[in-house]
Length: 173
Image 1 (cartoon, rainbow, N blue to C red):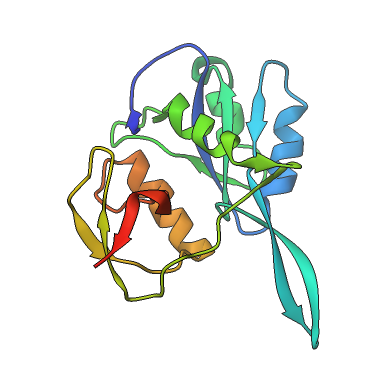
Image 2: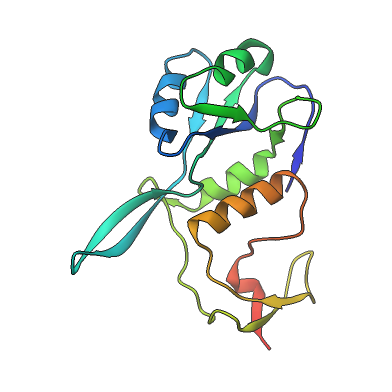
């Protein structure tokens, strides 16, 4: 589940936006033909002025996914108001987001929002991965905040070692 930077037809790409501009950029890009936008969002309960309220936030703040032809829309998207850049390799070729990453996020959608499972472990608790390709590895559990979700996304796009894994594969040590 990683990204290959290559030329291709319509693949998923990651667009980096200015803070708070994800919705605006998404609406602008949807006006273009043959472009698909995916902006995964979360619904969270948060305490606001002494009351618990539902809050909607982006799964990856300042990022959205889009499926398009880079040769046709790359320049136009790059210069769309609110866009900082399309994530690219050092040569400037847009990095393709693996379809499996998008499918994994979409598989967690419930009523239009990504459903994250409640943590069964405490922050700082040592854990061992029990199944999958990383079985046997150990690590330290910590809650994932919005900024960390972005780091996980960016690391997944550039083959880094930090991972997010389903807690069903973890066991306390």
